[in-house]
Image (cartoon, rainbow, N blue to C red; front, top):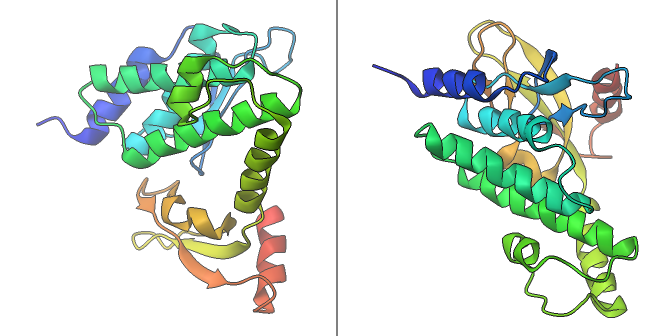
Amino acid sequence: MTTTRDKCIACALANTPASVRVIQIRKSLSGVAHTNPKSPDFGLLCAPRPVTRKALYIFLHECAHFVLGLIAKHRYLEEMECEKWAHARMREAGLLVPRTMTKRAKEYVRYKIIQAANRGCKKFDQGALKFAGLKLKRPLSKKKQAALQQHLQEIMSQPCVMVRFLCPGCGFEAHASVRRCYISEAMIICPKCELLLKPQLVAEPASCRRYEALRGLCEQ
């Protein structure tokens, strides 16, 4: 019987482009694609090991940057197309895209649209606005730009808390600083057992003396 893990690995192998020269495994659910041919890191793909649906989605998103390349003038359009590509590849493999990843994709595209607005962009693709959940039929006014920027700042101003990841199998332990609103989505993969580890709250900012010590530990 084919497990979800097997499907995820098979999907990742089938959709990794030939232009990817090196894959660097990350413990966190984040990724980077080095697609600039002039960069010394060209061909490097950084992503979590694609053994879960969430990890696979991020892996495929970074693969999409290699497959699609620079397809649009604005970054938000490029990111939207990469999100759609990752969704399509998972559905083709018979894997459901986690709702949290779909929500995260829309929030990311929304963030890129706000960035473009702050840099002077006044005309936006209606498909991208719809994907991001922004119902704007006219170019963003200064008032709307300020409102969106304030909303983003409110999200980014939420305090970070210190969390611990502990593997029940091998005892592997790691610490990280995470924004409170993203604790439920934070997770890493144990490098030894390859188990998905969920965070445990350790300390609040300025409420525990261990916070600064643990933060220093994370930055090492």
